[in-house]
Amino acid sequence: MSHDLYEVLGVPRDADGDAIKKAYRKLARQLHPDVNPDPETQDRFKDVTRAYEVLSDPEKRRMYDLGGDPFGGAGAGGFGGAGAGFSFTDIMDAFFGGAAGGGAAGGGGRGPRPRVRRGQDALIRLDVDLAEAAFGTTHELKVDTAVLCTVCNGDGAAPGSSPKTCETCAGRGETVHVQRSFLGEIRTMRPCAACRGFGTIIPEPCRECSGDGRVRSRRTLNVKIPAGVDSGTRVQLSGQGEVGPGGGPAGDLYVEMHVADHPVFNRHGADLLCNVTIPMTAAALGTTLTLPTLEADLVPGGGETDSGLETSVELDIKPGTQSGSEIVLGGRGVPSLRGSGRGDLVFRVVVETPTRLDERQEELLRELAAIRDEEAPDGHLHAAPKSVFDRLRDAFGPR
Image (spheres, rainbow, N blue to C red):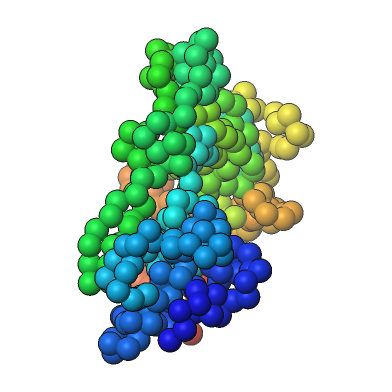
């Protein structure tokens, strides 16, 4: 094995730091004992590691190029001696492709972590009525969240003071820890305990936010709910979440809808379904009914909504209408959340049979039964009719 450090790494003498690091990573992936455990490979791995330790450090490289001993005699007894020191961080970078920065003596430090970071997203639930979900509305919402500290403007320092460079790590945010192993000295980079990895220390924290740059506060927001939302739909309010540490940008606020049950209408996707009960005489003879629609919830006194929508419809009951029949009014259901158009309003007719009759009513019904020859009727068995929703389910459901 050559003892020329440049030859060991396979780089020219004018190679820059990036080329040296790239060459070391490539060799480390090939020669690491976890990949090639034979003794010769381990010795070569030590040589490559020591070569990188020297050539990645500008001062040691300058000393080596001038013919000096970059190890100060500690490496006597052979280039691959037990006195070799290397950065465990660089080995991890070689295998996992981590970002390496300029550290001390091949330390491969990542540098200080920023104090200013993006805030977390927040999720809250909002209860709305069916009419509000169908036609859209604006809700006033009160949220407790983190906001920018107005005393320190987010930097965490008391007025008149400022963060100072950490003396323990010299602003790097990391410190070197050395351990002995069969490979020599393993140096690992750990976050500085004094500054918690920030590289700076706040000697006089802001009393209002205790140095965090943000405080808890209650805010009032106006949330615009689009027409057509349903339970589980989330409305995103960009930048309305929590302000980040150090006064960082705020996250997003997500408002999840929960639509309350309606006393009359049941929602099935974009369609509305309700039952309308009529007496048997109206079902037999036919009639016309004036019935409220969901828009009536927006105008309690009746009439038209602000957008000109009628709050009632005329429902034509044809003579001979049977119980369970469905009358569909197209375009009077829930507006589409994405796109145009509305679903249908479906009335299911329920024919009410009288349970109490006076003598005259009973006499008239018996006379009608005699005229229709229905005094002793025969029952007829047949399959129950499917509702419009059952038919849709059969048409689009799994086969």
